[in-house]
Image (cartoon, rainbow over the protein chains, first blue to last red):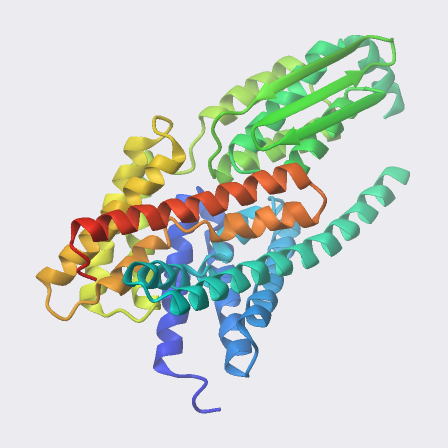
Amino acid sequence: MSDFFTLEFFVQVLTACLGTLGFAVLFKVQVRHLPFASACGILTYGLYYTVAFFGGSLFVAAFVASAAATLFSECCARLRRAPALVFLVPGAIPIVPGGDLYYTMRYLLSGDFSSCADYLVRALLIGIGIAGGIVTVSVVASLFSGKRKAAKQEK
Amino acid sequence: MEATEVKLCNAYCAETVLCLALDVGEGMLKNGGEVSRVERTVERICRAYGAVHVEVFSIISMINASVHMPDGTHSAQMRRIRSTGTDMYRLELFNKISRDICAEAPSPAEVDSRIREAKRKNAYPKFAAIPASAVAAAAFAVFFGGGVAEALAALLIGALLGVIDLLAADRVNELAKTVVAAFVAGLFSSVAALLVSGADSGIIMIGTIMLLVPGVAFGTALRDLLCGDLIAGGLKTMQACLAALMIAFGYLLSMAVMGGAV
């Protein structure tokens, strides 16, 4: 358990937050939504790390993290009356497999094709995990909001 | 509510209503809204103005819609969308316009002026993209295990990519821009690693490459696919895969120039 809260983890959470913030500005998220977008980034990476730490595979970690990010974004969207994408798009950035994609290219270049394939599969697994998490939660959320709207119209 | 609806049916012709709905839909699509949201929005706006029958079909580069009004008039229009980006502020504004239309059905002239206004509004000044991408690149360089040297190098290269992004905005093909950005990132990462002994060019590259990787785009593309928007989702998936390929191409080019000094 003592290995869980390493200095590296804290640095990563901090930089994930900062990176998310940078991306949020790049994606023109309004200033008043910025704290929520960064919180989404922290949540995403925190969960990804936690699941991976307790032995979850990359796919499961990405799935859980992006599902939580989507849930958080849908909640923020309802509370703050903005599209969920405003929080989700910057918030999912910390688990984007940029590193894996880099190593894929690097090993492709050096001719080490088995390592290249390894990293490509890792990147794809994480990508599919992210998509799966988003899909699962947003389908449920759309059912939920559909019901509420229908109830409103009946009034 | 019903009384106003009856009044509206007679007040607006099919052409005006559909044109307005498409303006809002176009605004959403151009600024990064999902295809399903756009289709839903166009349909809701038409219905708010009293349409009895609405059909909408949208992919990332086009919206096609037809509307029938209760008095028998009908209209079919198409919009071609040539460039899309991510501007959450404008997306939010168009979302708000759509919500207000559905709630109170304001006059088309008023909505039109709000649409024009939303198209011009910016959440941040243009050059804010430079510090933002610099900070993001530096943060991810540290995130992936870099130290001070790597962070500083990524900060500078990130700023450079921000400048490229500003210069290329709306002028250059998106994929060509990705190649150039990846090339510049690869080139300067290697140069930085040569100048500062002990700096890892890989870490610098990963930090800056995060600005280009279509990770979230890939996620939302698969989401569209799995939610049944097969064509839009397929196109987006293709776009994301192409972008990843272009990053690899730009990076490999830069390594060829640097003589494989990885």
